[in-house]
Amino acid sequence: MAGLGSDPAFQNYVPQYDIYGHRHISKPYKDKTDIFQKEIRHPKWLEPPPAIKTRTELQQARKQSRIPHKSYDFDGDGVVGQLDYFVGKCFDGDADGRLTTGERRQAEKALNNGFLDKYVRGLDATGDVPRGCFVRQRRGIVTAADNTQEISSKTYQPHFNAHKVPEISTQTALALSRLSEAKGAGLVNGERWAAVCAPIIEPQPSNHITAPRTNPISHIGQRAEGDHQLARVRGGLLPMSTAVNPEREYKTVGIERVNKPLFATRGQLMETRKEAMKRESEDLRAKGDEVCVPLSVRKAERDSTEFEFRRPIQDPMTLTRLRDSRRRDKIEYDMQHFGFQQVAPREYPKFSDHPDIPFWVSDPANGGAPGRHPPAAIPRTLSEPVFKITEMAFRDEARETTEALPEQAQSLAAGRQAHEKPVYGSKTVKRWSADMLERGQGRNQPRLFDNIQPVRIGPKDLESLDLTSSLEPVRSAALRARTNERKSNAQNPRRSQL
Image 1 (cartoon, helix red, strand yellow):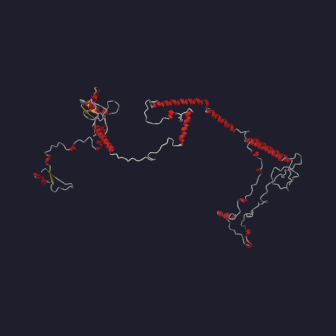
Image 2 (cartoon, rainbow, N blue to C red):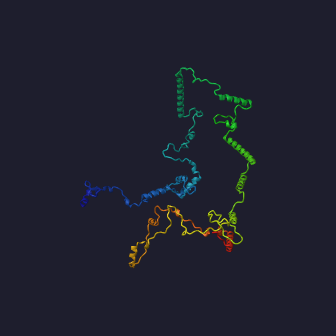
């Protein structure tokens, strides 16, 4: 580099490197003498930093610039509308997006002097920008997409023959007229040719199919109908029966024209029908008031009839009357069947009238009514039940004891000493099947319900229900009667004939 710098030919040369950081092979040095010929005031890195440094700040600044400043609000509603934005842009001289005090004062003065009278509003349109027709101004008149024909009469002078109305005003109407005229001419020529070239059909003689014979009366019913109509006419009636409402029933749906209809409009027809219906309803109401019974009266009559229908012929039976009747019947029955002598000696009631007592036990000579208390039940130990042939008698449960052992075991056990070891009890739970087999509940056993013992009748089963009644008067009367009966039995004990 020192040798290169000493050479005046390479005084302003700098080394040149490739993209890999190596010295360039063909051009190791680069000439920089053109720097002295350029006017360089200061390099870019000495410039002040830009106001917007990043792309995000640029997007935010653009978004903020699209929001109009509040100085554009001329109508004072707090929102900058389209008209406010247009007026503000017209008077924003520096285009900084806001109005200064002078620009604001100038805009308000212009608005007071009729600034907006020079512009036409309400011509906004939506859609694509390259649309076919757009709003524009020609010769001082605004032209839009839908008023071109109307405005053209104001922009151009009328022709000399504009007062004449042509039969065909447009080219499309002319083409359609020519087409229809050609079709009509072709149709006429075709019909003429078809009439000239029509085939001639050979005439055929008439037969029963082509020319059938017709009679004035084809059925016997027609003759009878004619006689019937003639009889009606002779009697002063019309030949045929008429409708009940001819004005309505003879009318049919059609498209015939009525020159002077009774109802010119549908409103008149509906109003007439409405009035007729009201009048008919009023007449029916008046007639119903004369012959119709009100609903309340009919309901009261029905309720009265139902009540009388359900009224019993005699007084209804209540629980109190039922118990009193049973008590009276019981007293009468007892007095009839269990009457006792009022003189001594007293005797116990007899059972001769009872069908369950054998005749050799009863004593008809002595007479008397059977006793009130039944005989005591025989205990089971004295009376075994009667079994069937296939059944077994009751027996005690068999248990294994030392007495059932053979004599050899008894003698052997008598000569030995008792063991001194403690004997502990055991709680062995048998299976339910083993327990059933030990108790004799296996197969071929008597049926369970055949061995059910009869229920024993206790002293409480034969006493009167009045003794345990929940009513105090009934219970007191029953207890008082039993006390009196006990006293009388103590004085005059009963005696059995057995």
